[in-house]
Length: 265
Image 1: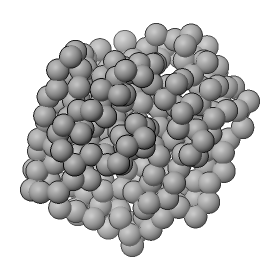
Image 2: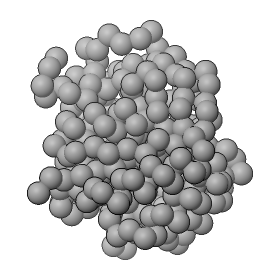
Image 3: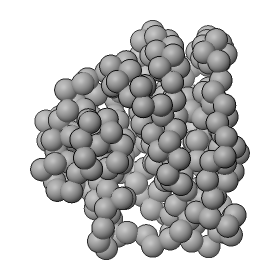
Image 4: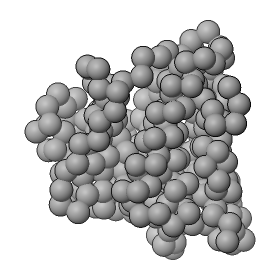
């Protein structure tokens, strides 16, 4: 049976993040990619220059078109910038039963804000309870919990607990914004914390890392893997894409990871 993964996210005209990164990741990992576009961004490796939200009616129409025909096995949610968008997506997803990976895209790698401040509470209330796993980085976890950025494991655990209390089944707080030779992600699931460390890849080509990791988890869940296995395989894929991405010459800013490093160099 064909594994089908659906991404609900914004479009990145530079191709490194958002819908484009998700489709590349799904495809690289052997899942069929379907998409619902929530916003169109004008961006490249140097930053975001314009954002136009897709109407709620068109977002709903896209979701209905996909779910009425395709047997979707897992869903990834990325950029959902407005209250109305979040509410509409949540209403449609409550009718479904697939695993949901929520990557709370709030700020782009360039520092550009992608989630309206007044929509954070709606995201907490409507989308966290639907999430099989939420994958915030350290700044996003702070915004989600109304806290300053965590600097210790205790602070990370406190923020994860708040996200779990809001309804998420599992939380992965990503440590890529931290310091040191290792990047440590923290998985909170089934009442336990697990630290997942890997050597930090020194590269300027890291645009789309969050999208790529969440999409990779989604692809593996769509193929029937359980959460911890899906996460482990997704981290291995991302590390390979980051390492290979150091050789890409795309743009003049923070370039993308290499989604197809297993096929071409």
